[in-house]
View 1: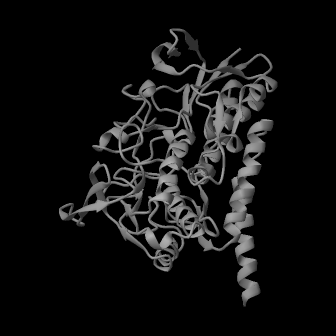
View 2 (view 1 turned 90 degrees about the vertical axis):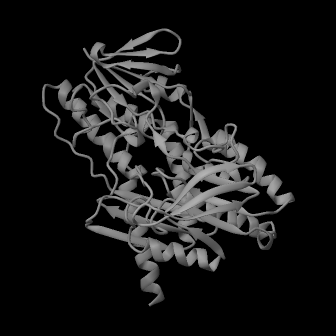
Length: 428
């Protein structure tokens, strides 16, 4: 008999529990540990921030589904992992022992690394959590009454750039619909070396597509830019040369700003020698298995992945939904193998599929594999992307609610490329 523990119940953790349950022997058990019993669909947070969704539209209670699937469910935050003892210490003083552990915690948001940054006592907004998005909506509503400059982007060390671009264009669409776009200068500030880099050195023509969208919508941008500090209504930034020297320091006024932070591992799993890197991300091999603690696996944003290469300002590598889904499937099979006396043999595909909604259009891209050189390096744009994102939201929430584990992203990628190809053929 073995006890498998999944630490975290977000995108990676929830589907990890479902897929792992299918791999267990009759005598095995599984428990999910999470600080939040409510699942929320993170990709919809930009819509929350401009009032296009409400909290109840994108959240659901995980407890009924976990119970129906026969999965133990503890809604207590982890305090500290003790890998030598095969034990997770919880904030309420209790502990959970495990035979196999899957770390799926997601990241800690490093707002504190920049003075005046973030929604917790700082002056910028976030769409990383539904609570942040609801707070951003309050400031957005003030912007509608008193228009002024807007700064959107991602700071040094960020690894999740897609939502920054999404929110930039969703906000632009919302301002046009409110008929105040002409009163709101917009600037995109990013640590990327060029627009559309995305932490992936671009996918297809994301550089050209995104620059074209920005020009067409009169949005200025600053790349290779580091945020020095934020004050009320003012952001101080430094543009960085290729050699790392400061090219220029600028003070940018704003009435509203949403900037994505850098990520790091959560305190409960950080600082353990052999488990994580200096940022607290969990080190894994090709089988999602930690090299030192062989009964610990990790999936999702908490996994340590080296950057694509040196950039003037640090840029991380994103962990997209497709990539996370492939990590989950490989991990479930590999732990299943161990339970049946076999060695891990499954490797995640680590492909990237993204639907970036712009409110009334969008950009889609597929990178197979995510890290270049690639076999597929494709991107496209059009109004169909917005519709596809809405459909994806409804599908994925239904999947989480029902507790199903069928892969979805690969089918989405093939369908997206097929739709775009059909449109191009029709035009011709």
